[in-house]
Amino acid sequence: MTTTKSKIALVTGGSRGLGRNMAISLAKKGIDVVFTYNSNKQKADEVVAEIQSLGQKAMAFQLDTSKVKVFDEFFKQITAYLKEQTGSTNFDFLINNAGTALYAPFAETTEAQFDDVMNIHYKGVFFLTQKALPFINDGGRIINISSGLARFSFPGSSAYGSMKGAIEVLTRYLAKELGSRGIAANVVAPGAIETDFGNGHVRDNKDVNAHIAGITALNRVGLPDDIGGVVAFLCTEDARWINGQRIEVSGGVSL
Image 1 (cartoon, helix red, strand yellow):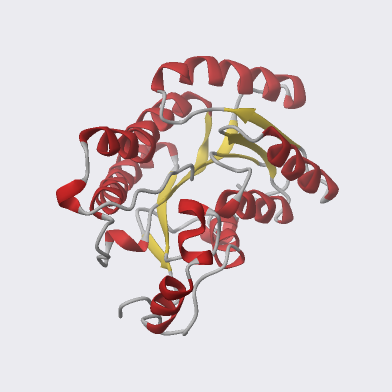
Image 2 (cartoon, rainbow, N blue to C red):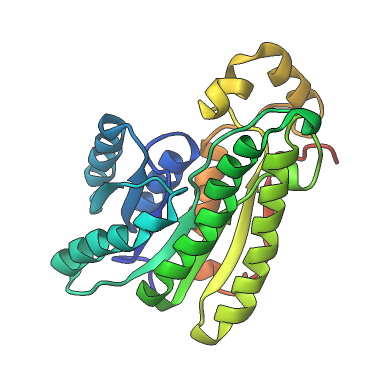
């Protein structure tokens, strides 16, 4: 790759929070964006309009990333769109971002809760990436969104943190197995961020917010703008030699 102009990214969970910021940050790098949303089409349409205002193409598709059985139909939809827009069914960057929160003590976590978190944070990522492989251009990038909770521990996040740990191991395997195609795979691991994730658990709970700021070297909680630019950078030519790495973007939590 010699330029990011006219490259195409697929972002899961791009209608709000970190995914929204990632999609817009990619557009600011001259990358066209296809992204998914789970239920809020209005928010998705707003992101599409914002990306288009930056001069890039954008399209949003509904997808529940926890439901592997719908992935074949999803890729039929997006590849038809790409074929119409570009003459090719392929894209360059896959950002696995979609997620859900679970705050439950280990002893009280139910099998149903565990399965819900696993399906969206691990199984869905595993098989969506597998289904995407025929459509990712050689020399492309895969970026999996993990969490600082795979390194440090907060009570109540055992299931969520475990799934993110699994994603980090998977990413190293992707980097190894896809290297022959020139596809790099990396992890971006945000710390606690002020978004609506988990019903605004970090953003709206003053005690939680103050606690996290107090154990962060840069003395504040993260913002979406702290994350999207890192993801976009990993899709540029300057990041071509970064592969199989975990980049934590947390301001230095629990150092």
